Image 1 (cartoon, rainbow, N blue to C red):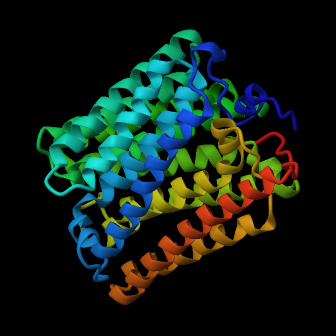
Image 2: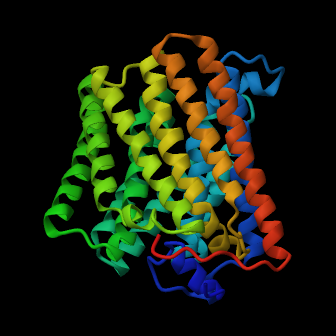
Image 3: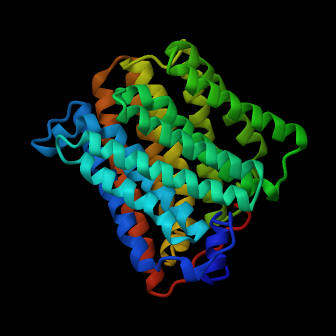
Length: 389
């Protein structure tokens, strides 16, 4: 693997625009932004456990209502915006992760919901602008998809800022993640180019998703029902077109990434099927929990686990050597999510609650494993190259 910073960034999928190092921030300015994201992650996990009935004294209990915003915008919004800023390599683009990170901090302060929503929306606006600049530089279907994903994050936070409950913004959050991940995988699929027909199917699915989330604002059941169909369609498209179908036969990091991707697509399909079987996403309840966490936990975090060993070197310029340990958090994530969903389907609150605890432990194991790998990398061990991911 080439160890030059610009090459690592391009291997990580951050290849959307020519790098302009003179206008970029050094790593020492990126690290605090990533720290803000992980603070939101752990606060969001604690808030989620409080929602499941685990009695945390003080802050965690009061944060329970902020579980969604902390995870979606405080953590993922900051990380995705930081990745996009590195790709664009313009200083103003770093306002997006900064605003999202600060929004997460204010979300952790009681009584600051409006300010948090404003900061998240502002971060979404900057991310949308940065994504549009990238699209202007490279007019491709995948860059357009990334613009639409950023716009969904912005619109969801604007709806929250305008007074909509957090639950009403869930379709926008789902669209933000699915469009962003699908766009990045489409960009990487040039290694296994989709046919013109496949590209038209992809575009139709993305359009259908936008129509669905917009319709959910006025007709929740109907809009989310269409969203479920689109999620299933995107999962099938990605599973069919992604180069991971071939690289899963590889070794080391290459195979690990492919396993993460393919297992994530299964969770995306499971979410779509659950929504379809329930006649829509619904508000609260077992089916809502199952569908929501299948996509936002199973699908999204599978992508995070798989791409962390190549994203961290690109963003922080540190080596993350592959280790078979990487599979441990992934297996725990899937097993705990199955336990949680079984609890939903059986209406067994204990299974659901313990599944949530194990979900949190899987994320903690992932973070600790990544830190350990970084320490190994700083000790001078060369990272295992991942080819064609």
